[in-house]
Structures are given as C-alpha cells and as structure tokens.
Image (cartoon, rainbow, N blue to C red; front, side, top):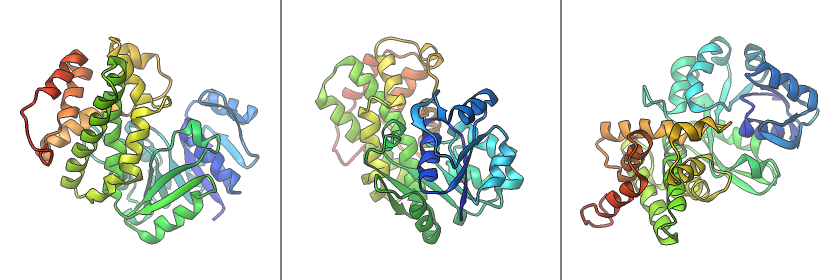
Length: 333
C-alpha cells in the first residue's frame, strides 16, 4: 500500500494528510471548495484552517471527489458527521471497493446511526473494512507534532492492527480496540458535555462543579453506550474519559467555545454564524436526546443542555434544575 485518500481538508483532515505524507505515503486530499483547493495546491498550505503547516511534496489537493475516492487503497473520511451520508452517496460506486477510516464524531439526527453504520448502509463496505479513529487529538496540537494518543476501532482485529501501523508515529500513538460501538459513542457524546462545560466556565461556577459535570457526564454517556451494546470499560479509556477531559478544558475545543458563548448570553444562531468550523455537539445533542428516550436511558445533563440550545432556557435555570433533582445514590442516574 502506497496511496491514501483524505476526503475533507478541514483542520483535522489536513493534519492527518500531512502526518501520512510525512510517513512517505502518497496522499491525495479532497477540498469541497474549488477556490480553496486551488489555493492549497498552489501555496502548499491550508491557510484557512491550519496556517503555518506546510504540505510535504507528496500531498496533493483536488476538488474532484471521484478522483480522490479512486486514488487510495485506504480512504480517510474527514468530513463533519452530517455530511458523511452525502459524501458516501456521491462516491458509492468507488468507495464500496475501499478500506474506510472514519474520523467524524457524531450521530445522524434522522436515523440515529453511528458513522460506521452510515458508511456501511450506503456503500456496502463490510464492517471488516471500516475503522474509526477517535480520541483527545486537537489538530492545533497534533499538527505541531505535540504528543497525542488516539484509538483505532474496528470489529476486525487484523484490519485495525494495520490501520494502527499506518497512522502511528513517534508523536502520534495509536491504540486499537474492537469495541467500535463504544469508541464511536464516546467520541460523539462527549461533545455534548463539552458544551455544558463551556457554559460552566462562563458562569464561573468553580472547579468543583466542573469536575462533577465531567464525572457525571461520563456516567450518562456510559449508561447509554452500554444500552447500545458497547463495553462500559471503553468509556474509561482514551476515546471516552480522555477525549472528554480535553474537549471540556481545551482552548481549541469548538464545543466548549459554543457553551462559553451561550453562558455569556449569546444566541446559538449568532454563535454558529461566526464560526468557520463545525461544533458537532450541537446536532449530536438532538440525536443523543432522541436515542436516550428510545433506549429508556435518563441523561439529565443532555436533557438540560437541549433546553438551553433549542428551547432558550437560561443556563442558570438548567444548572438549578440539575442541582435540585431528587436525591439519590451515586450508583443511580
């Protein structure tokens, strides 16, 4: 294997494309905006999303989705979760013969499918040839070659072992897991708690409260994940609590930023209109709320955040609702 395709040249897709090219793979990346694709190819840099990180000579950019999909034996899907179905539908005839690595974190609102389920249902690619990469890996740090860890998950141990070798570097440590459900559920759900964490920071309610929020957040994520067939142990690892910690605290977290702005009194549409990248947690809150009701799992933080995001509940009222719930054992929800 020598050639790899990367569909989606946002900050994370660009970071992974550079990482793979640095490992001497020939990489062809797809940028959906033709002007930006031409600019990246000419200037050898993604000035829009990852300024200062120069492209290796073996990284090429194209605006032709079919060309990029055909190019590599492995195709990395690095588009937002709400776009995965559209991309898979457009590239179905080509992608069905490929090995897929998904890096999007989210669930479909309409179908409540995880990303691997969407990919499989549209392209027909076997789950044996689908992997998901997920963990505490902000592009702003990985692109500077700061140490980071991530989990590659697939039901196929041999396939995920191969993906581990493809992506592993001396600064990017890749662990493997066969709990695809748990890794995808953890990567999706943690963005909800991160928005809540941003609200907590804006309200200045203290370190004690934020620690409780993160801890109780992972518990409700774990409960839902277990009902969906995940191994609860997965949520104690890198793709669970690890990703949750960094997303709730990092200055690079888009979801935490959204929460912080909400906590300062800004309206959601005003916040999102001023962002050039997607905060997955907004749409995921809708999906996870629906899924939790379907699975009969109580998720207090998710439910209160939903009210803040979509029913204009004041953040302090949501906080009071959480703090004044009926007293119970920690082993309960």
